[in-house]
Length: 130
Image (cartoon, rainbow, N blue to C red; front, side):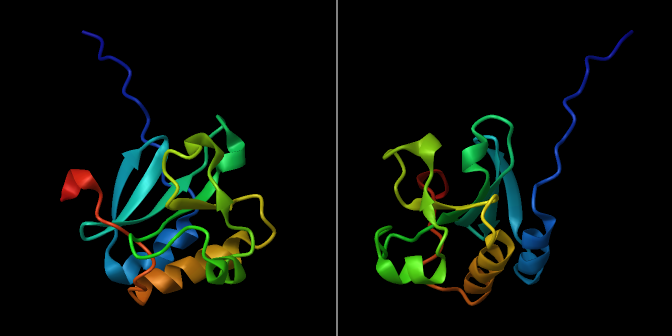
């Protein structure tokens, strides 16, 4: 008897990000062609590397309820930060550090540092986990 082809599990992109967050023992979940990164119940990042809509590949930074996505201080810390085209205005509190940015690795590691320091601007508990 033949077994149906099993979908090959894709490794999460940008392993250096997960390595940086390792002390917090992040939980990973596939979501929206991305890898969702949770610290406890808090969704902090999404990692995306897809052939579909490659302009939205990179690190999706999940902002907390306490910060507006338009805050200028965020733009100073993350110069390449921008809206995620795929989401339009549907989810405005997720912003993208694009993988094609010349500062992608540096900005991604800075985001990891903020997560490691439990920065109150990063992460939120999704409705599904409340």
